[in-house]
Amino acid sequence: METRLCPREGEACIFRSGFLLPLLIPLFFASLFLLSPSPLSAQEKTNDEIYPYALGGGAEVNLNTREGIAMGYGAAVDRYISYAGGKGILLAGVKASMQTDFGGISGTEAGAYLRLNLLEAGPGFFFSQLGWGYSTYREDAITANAMLMDFTLGYRGFFLNGFYFEPYFRTGFPFRMGFGLMAGHWFAF
Image (cartoon, rainbow, N blue to C red; front, side, top):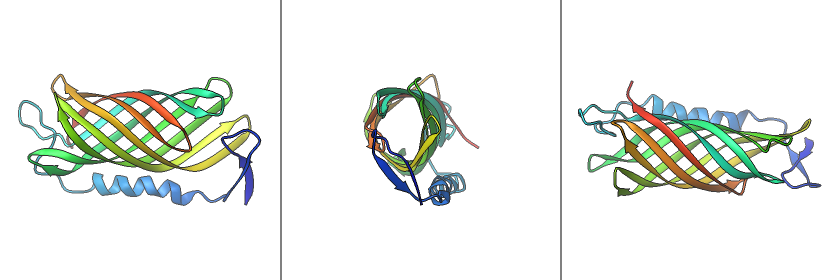
């Protein structure tokens, strides 16, 4: 065991040096939805082609550092895994992001998530999402590793025949909260 810096100043935490299990969790979720057979219906374009996958990138303002506000950016890919009434209601995905406060603290996050589309509104859905993964924060030469758990509320709206935008709010551990905007495109293999 080794002692490393915690998110709060002056507090020491004990972390096990092994970190293989947290890295395998996102790979497990990715294999489930990427290797599963194509669904019968999915997010559709106007020409009735089925597009069950989405790939996007975005930016976030969050409170992920001791000093307060940090900026982040990242990417995510997801796939519908459950349908009701011809519309996707449950998605699974993987995401990765980086944050910095531009003053010496930086962080990375990698994880998997399950998303439930709650309410259809306009050209999209309001959603609720649970995520799990692994995070690493670095300040100078000191590193802190932790499991990542987050809860996200947002809206995914569709436009221009296959593109989407996604404003969201998230909270969880080891960070306090974040607001962000993702944008991307639907596609099929």
